[in-house]
Image 1 (cartoon, helix red, strand yellow):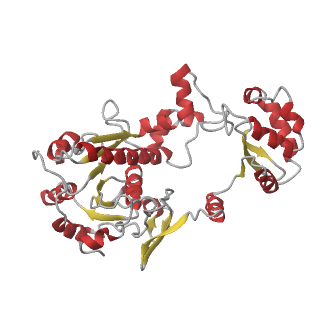
Image 2 (tube, rainbow, N blue to C red):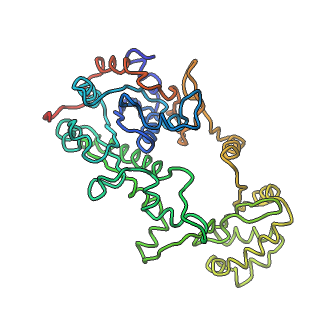
Image 3 (cartoon, rainbow, N blue to C red):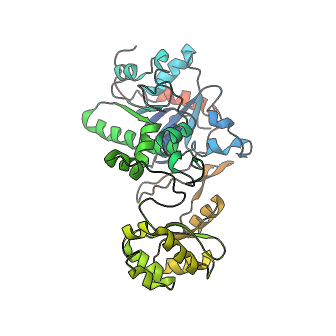
Length: 401
C-alpha cells in the first residue's frame, strides 16, 4: 500500500494526464467508467466510497476470487477511501480531497449533495477554479427525481423500440450501452473543461445525462425523426438504409455482410458467382437494393449455401468485402488477440494482478498504464489521508458555504 504522495502518484506519472487529480464521488458504471479512462491516461483518481461501498461490488455473478467482475471492469488505477459524509470529520476530509483536485465528478441525484455543501452552486462559490462534472439520469429539471438506470434510458429513448425482430417484443441491448456512452461523454466534457481552464483560469460545471447521451448516440435514428419526422421501427438485424447489411445464412451458420457502397456490392456478387446481379437494374444502387432487399436476400443466401461461413469469411475478406462470423464474447476476445490488438491486460503489480480489458486509446509517446488493480473497499484510506497532508491546495478557495 502506498503511504506517501510519491508512491501514490508514481504509477500515473508518465501518462498524458499526469498531474491531474480527480475526486471521484461516482458509483456503478457511467461515472466509474469515465474516471477509469482518465486514470488509465495518468490522472490520479481518488475514489470516495460510502462505508457500504460502490453498489457494483455486490453485483455477482460473475466474480473472481469473490470480487464482482462488474466492479472490476471500471475501477482499475484508482485509490479507494471510505467516507461517511454525514460525519463532520469525514465531510471535512472530502472537502480536503476536493480542494486538492482539478476535477470533482459525481453522479448523485440532482440536489442530493446540497446538504453537504457540494451542489453545483456551492462548489462554484467555494472552489471557483474547480471543474465539477455531474452525471444524472434525466437532467436536473423535470427528470431530476428519476433514478438513473441505463435500462430506463434504453426504454425512454426509443432504443428498445428499434431493437429486436419486427414481430417480436422490444429488446434491451446486451450491455448497459448508454451508461458507457455517457461515461465517454463525461470524459470528453472534462478534458474540454481542463483545456478551457488553461486560458480562462476558471472552472465550470459540466453536466451529462443518460437520456441526452442516448438520443445523441442513436444518431441516424433520432436524426431522421428530428429532420423529417420519420419514426423507425424494429427491423431485426436489417439496417434501415443499407442492404446487404446484416447476417446471411451460409451452409452451416450465419455470416454478417456489410456493403456500404456499390463497389463493395459488386465485389461481393463477383465472389458469389453472380456478377450479373450487380448490373441488374433492381439492385444497381443502394436505393434499388433497399427497395428489393427480400429478393436480393434469396439470391445471396442461395450462393452462400455452397460453403461454410468460415470459408466465405476468408474468401470475401481477401477481396475486401466487409464481413464477419458471429462470435461469442470469448470468440471476440480471441479474435482481437489473433489480429494483434492484445485486448486483455493485467492491472496491478506483485501479488495483486487482475486481467482486465485494455483501454482502447493508444498514444505514440505517453503511455496508458495499468499499474493498479481495482482496489478493495477503503484499501487506500491511509495513503489518501497522508497524501492530503502533503498535497498543496490546487486552487484558490472562495466563500465557504
